[in-house]
Amino acid sequence: MRLQVLSSGSGGNSALVRAGEARVLVDAGLGLAELEARLETAGVPPPVGERSTLDHVLVTHGHLDHARSAGGIARKHRALLHGSEAMLSAPAFRRARRLSTLRVGAGAVLDEREGLSMSNVALPHDAHPTVAFRLEHSGRVAVILTDMGRPDEHVAKALRGAHVLVLEFNHDAQMLASGPYPAALKRRVAGDAGHLSNDQAARMLRWMASEHLHTLVLAHLSQHNNRPELALEAAHSTLEALGLAHVRVLVASQHEIGENLEV
Ligand SMILES: [Zn+2]
Ligand SMILES: [Zn+2]
Image (cartoon, rainbow, N blue to C red):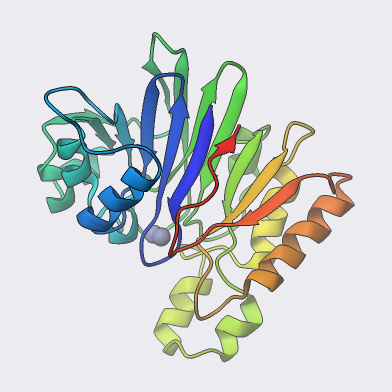
């Protein structure tokens, strides 16, 4: 299985997972033209004829930086669009031809032939529901967890054991407190239904990391309230304390697609 982040941050989130012949997009938060361009750069051009070029589009929650082009990209690439019941009536979803209701907290086989399975876990965040996804193929596990308001040990334990982990390191608490956001927005981001600070993400990492983990991708970094060095420092010191200093740590970009990682 391979995982490639196409975009990460409040300007749009999307990641491509490939397992054998199966192709799954997790979130579609860029504008349609930009998302298509990044997919093409990643080796997934638009379809010719009736053949599907993406099999599934999974959406974590209804905020536009995750759901903006979900219906459009699913329709264009002839994919099955998976969203919670609350999401399926949203404008971003209506364009899809094939819809599947995501059961929150449940698992499903996405591709029988490839043996690709998916499960999801509900997260505390101010879009209900919001989920994290765990994808498993041939004994390898990728987890994508962003948009979480506070650390939660039960969530972490349910998603422990990934080989590749994409984890939100949204903000530095000091930078957010002294930064340019209006007070109400500061409260939202820092609140229990907002986003993980670097310290909170490090706590999640302590619970989630196992000896299987080889690559950690720091995701959804705030442009205004974080710096890659601060997020990297929080991640590296946590991994070192766990005896996992060998784990590779990358920062996902808002502006360009990431490396196509072997899970
Ligand atoms: Zn988001
Ligand atoms: Zn969100």
